[in-house]
Image (cartoon, rainbow, N blue to C red):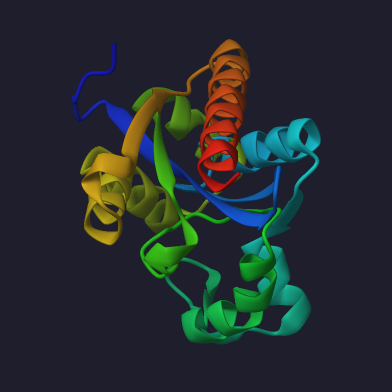
Amino acid sequence: MVTNTPKNLYWLLCFNYRFIAPHNLLCLENVSGTPGTGKSTLAQELANVTQLKMVNVGQFAKENDLFCGFDDKLECPILDDDQIIDELESEMSEGGVIIDYHSCDFFPERWFDIVFVLRTDNSILYDRLAQRRYNEAKMKNNIECEIFQTILDEARESYKTEIVHELQSDTPNDMEQNVDKIVTWCNQWSTSVGQQRA
C-alpha cells in the first residue's frame, strides 16, 4: 500500500508504445525523478530486460551541446528543452527507446501511454544525495521538491491523471519487483494492442 505522506518522495517512469507492424510493437519509456531516486538504475535494468535503447537526457545534452546556460546556485547546466525535444522527436517516433531524465513536464504528452510514479523514503534519498556530495542549495532543492510532491504534481498536470500510477522504490528488492511489474504491464499492453490491430 502506498500512502501520501510528506516523508515519501516521488519520481516518474513514463511509457509509450508505438505500433510498427502486425505483432511487432516497440516501446518508448521515460524514467524521470529527483537525482538519487534510482531512475538511471531502473532505466538501465529495463533496457537490459526489454532490449530497448536507453537515452540518458543529461548525457545526450552534453554530447550534443543542448544547454542554454548554467545555474551557479545549483552548480549544473540548464537544458534547452526545445532543442532536446527537437533532437529526440524522430527517435521517439520510431519507438524502442527508454528516456532517463529527472523531470517530466517538458516532454510532449503524445510520447507516453502510462506514467509510473516511484516513491522513495526521504531519509534514503537524503543519504544518496549526501554520497554524491551535492552542495547545500542543490540538496535542499531536491529534498524540498520531493517533500512537496513536485514531480507527482508535474506528472498529474502534464499527463492524463488516469495514466499516472505509483510504485514504492526504497530497496533493491523494490527495484526488482518494479521491473517485474513494469515488464508484466508492457507484455499485457502489447498483447492488447496487438489483438486490437490484428
